[in-house]
Length: 207
View 1 (cartoon, one colour):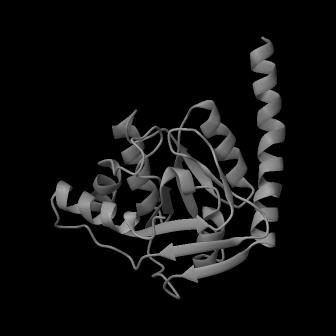
View 2 (view 1 turned 90 degrees about the vertical axis):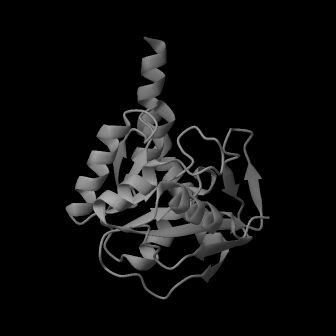
């Protein structure tokens, strides 16, 4: 009973505070964007490593002035906290992962793309292995005929957690470096070739 109470309390309080913290971090850091000036209006899959997820909403808002996206987030409690946090930035969610309940999640993602939504996905989430691309992003892109934009976010000052993804939290008063690829088309590629393309694209700019 106590555990459920504190979880409910956390779901009320933590996402709001987290959204304020994210805004504070963005406002107090310099920003560098190594990115295309624009991305086609057609529904697109935005992909970043799980450990670099925190500041993704601001990259997305650079290309979409009116948010129209759903992010694949774990259905576990930590995922619920993230889901509620990103609602403060106008983003929706699809609960689950392409590892568990894979078919259901893929179908929901494909349907969302066909309904005009962009999709946010962490190819190595929700539980890793870290920086290894799972099949889900390729299957979704190919079946929905959507292109993929790769995103890296590397801050100059940060805390790094000891979690499996080495989750990165930028510190104030540094610089956020965003690296964004042109849209990639994996249609017509076999699974291994497509995964290699995404893997190599996301491995760029690593420290």
